[in-house]
Length: 316
Image (cartoon, rainbow, N blue to C red; front, top):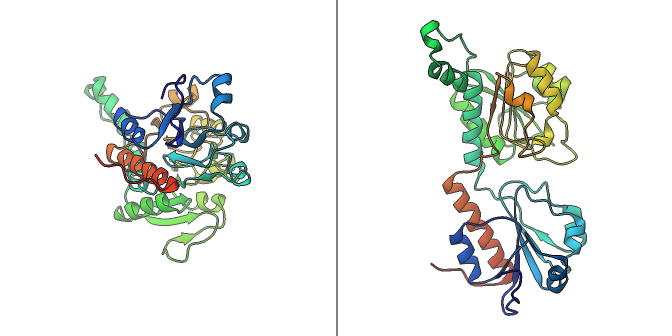
C-alpha cells in the first residue's frame, strides 16, 4: 500500500520499519496491508494511527514509548533478527503490546562467525593476506602469531549463542569458562562470578551477552587490563557492552593483543581509531547474516504474524 492509499479493513495493517526483499513483501501482502514507515507525514499518521495493528522491525530498529503511543491500536511488534535492544520493552508491557522474542535460528551462524573472527585475530589472517598482496613476503617471512588450539576460552553470556561457541571451542581442545546472570546447572564449564575474574583467567574473551543498561560498558579498562597482553577480545553481542574508548587505548598500548568486533556502539559509525589499528578485525554486524539464516528468520517472523492474527499459512 502506498502512503496515499486507504487500507483494506479486511486485512490487518502492518507497519514496516525494515526493508523487505520483494518476495517477502509479496508474500505478506497476501494477508496484510503493508505500510512503509519511511515517508509517512503527520497528517497520514493521524489518519492511520487507529488502524496499524502490527509493526515489523529489524534488530537495529528503535521503537520508543512515544512511537508506540502514536499507534494506539498496535498489538504486536515482530523483530527480524537477534536482539530487541532498540525496543522499549517496559513501555510495550505497560501498553499491552506483545514483542516477538529473538529467533533461535541464528545461534549456529553467529557461533561460526565468532570462531572465524577469533581465528582471524589470533592467526592474523587479514594482515597476512595483505602482507602477501603487497609483495612484502619477498622481503622476509611473516612474524609468528598467537596459537589458537588448546587455549583458555572465556564466554560472557552462556545463552544459545554462547553454548554454540563453547561447543566449537571444545573441538579445538580449549578449556571453557563463562560468566553471566547465574551459573548453569546443565553444562560442564567453569563458572566465574564476574567478568573481571573471567578475563584474568582466560586467553580469549568472547562477548555473547545481550545489550541494555545491565551490560552497558561491562567490558571496561579494568577487564581489558585483566585479559592481558596475550589476550584477544571478540564481541558478537552488542556494541554498547564494550567501552570503545578503553578498548582503543588498550589496543594502542598493547594492553591486549587484538580485538575482533562484529558490533559497535553507534552503528554504522565505527571509530576511526579502531579502523586504523593494525590489531583489529572488523565486520559490519553480519554474524547472523547467512542466506539460510535470513530465510529462517523471515519464516519465523511470518509465522508469528499469522499466528497472532489467526490467519492461514501463506502458500506459494
